[in-house]
Length: 148
Image (tube, rainbow, N blue to C red):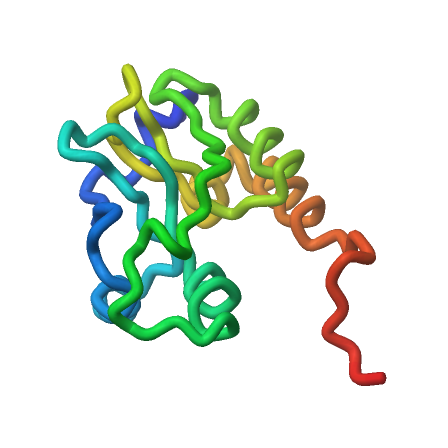
């Protein structure tokens, strides 16, 4: 059974840089069927992420062009784990931070990414994935999708 993220993380991760444009990122997300892409510097240090939500909220909703740079819309409050983080610890962190995906970094460099689905596909960790997902899905009162 897998115990650490090193054993379950995805290592072939698409990345973008600060100077890539939002249109290219959206196409990359579509082509690779992902909702988040880590942002790296020239040394592969993970400096943020850009999500499909970032593109909508900080891009389209603020009337930015598709040529807007990643640095204008990315999320910089970066939550990461190391490859040696236990799966249980990662699930708890994902639940606490209410995130579904976590970049995995070693010495600041991106080495992989772990998604909620990665936890769920390892049967021993279905409970951890379920707990994390239930915490992520818990309404906070800050966002409402109801029609008034």
